[in-house]
Length: 390
Image (cartoon, rainbow, N blue to C red; front, side, top):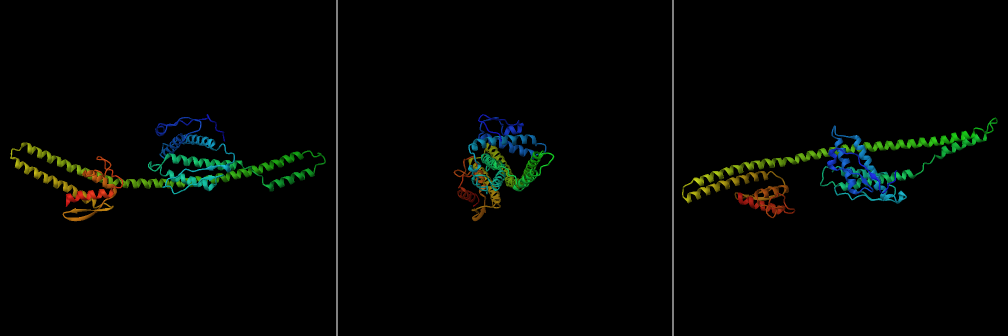
């Protein structure tokens, strides 16, 4: 583990243009800041997503980005915990997770356990499932989670490396006995020549035994790492399935919007016909030489036509409203009160369409209903439709 210096420079790898658009990484001098670490994590996440597209992956770049991320996190770790001599005295405080994450992390005091490390890894995977939803994914929380995992892993590793390896006492006893026997049975012709060599060979045996035990321990750790990697792959596949399901739900949600667009096109057609009627009435008015009273009758007839068209539009709209689901409100049609259900998400659109959203929508040119105005909006829409259809 290299020691961090105050003026140390951390140079990132060269990025392709599509990653530079996300975050152009610059060389870091001294202790890396939160924003610099957030930028590196954003680039790493984008590079990993690009690797899922055939022909877009660059394993060498991802490896270099991972090395750069490790160096930066190591510098932050050393600047924060370098003054603490013993890992038992360290306290690792996790970030506060949002409400939609069910896992709750507690501060880790002393040497982190394997269960605490796994819990933080599970929290990171749960939070990164929302990386495609900017409204509920905060890059700073993701950075703090990643750094917290790095810190407790380094604390666990530092404690493990500080424990000296002990040679098993049984092997040591057998070796000492062999050395004693060789010393007590010298060769008469050599005058104890060669005894030192036997002792050296016995020492080598002890060292070889310790080496084998260390290799076995390393192999066990490698097997555990492979098991964790397999578990991570399974969780990644599960997260991909959840993402695909979310995409399907979003596609289904777009269908009502498409239907609304078709209805709007139909309304535009009616308005175009209305404009033609108005143009024809203007032509008739200009070319008319009849008395003013007859012209008034013509205008009244035109007004009745317009009212009928408006009522037809409202009846068409109300027929669609009856098919919706949501809280109900009453509308009087030909003297008979009828109940209709309309979801909250449609209230602002209908108020804006009929031009009756004053005081309920955010402004005159917006179909966004103010918060808490749902009941008032249904009452106004009920009064307006009843006045047109009653």
